[in-house]
Image (cartoon, rainbow, N blue to C red):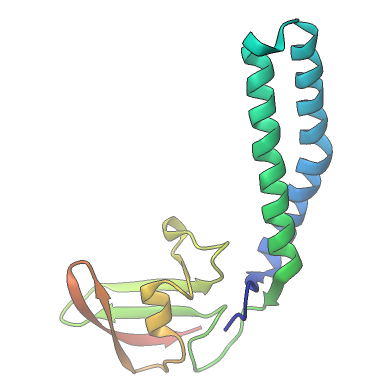
Length: 156
């Protein structure tokens, strides 16, 4: 488990964030500087909407740069692993008690979590409930609809 502000990332996500950071620091900063220069040339800055918009964009871009740098600095790379125990990088197939349908999720760090791609964070209620479990084990976790019981069918 992460200590302090460690962030677990796959190598793929780490590389993606490095590319984003490079883009933000080079191309994006230059575009914003050009927007600011253009807005300044329009005159009175107190009632200049373009200038205000460019300043806001600059602030949000700098905030994103700080966030990405922080994540990359504290990142621990996890590799997809084959194991009989659920952990970071595992792909787990589970089945809700009393139902026929199966659900398959990848356990990832918080930066990569994306329910649309069946990637859940290891600190989410479901992810946390599965951590450390083995194939065939059952587990429960609480949702707004009550306590749910699931069985682990497979771990990849």
